Structure formats: C-alpha cells, structure tokens
Length: 37
Image (cartoon, rainbow, N blue to C red; front, side, top):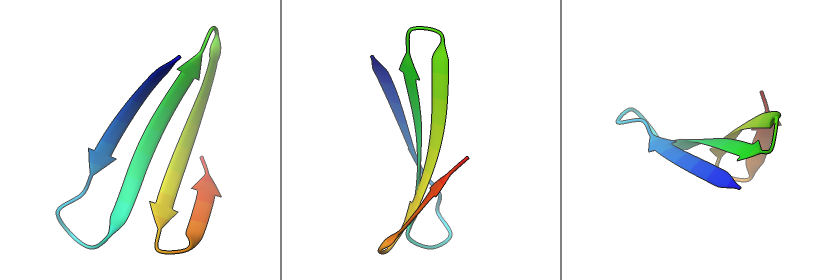
C-alpha cells in the first residue's frame, strides 16, 4: 500500500493518492470534508 501526500500552498486542502495493488484512490481532505476523486 502506497500513500502519497501532497499539501497545496493555497489553503488547508490535502491530497492523498492511495494505491493498493491495481486500485488507485484519490482523496481530497479540506477541514472536515473528504472527497473521493
């Protein structure tokens, strides 16, 4: 399982790229809001 974390300089939004086997999941976390990309 690979997790790549990126933090943008503008604001408090965090991007996570999670790779499990052949599956890739993108997450955007901003405060209490979590988005699946």
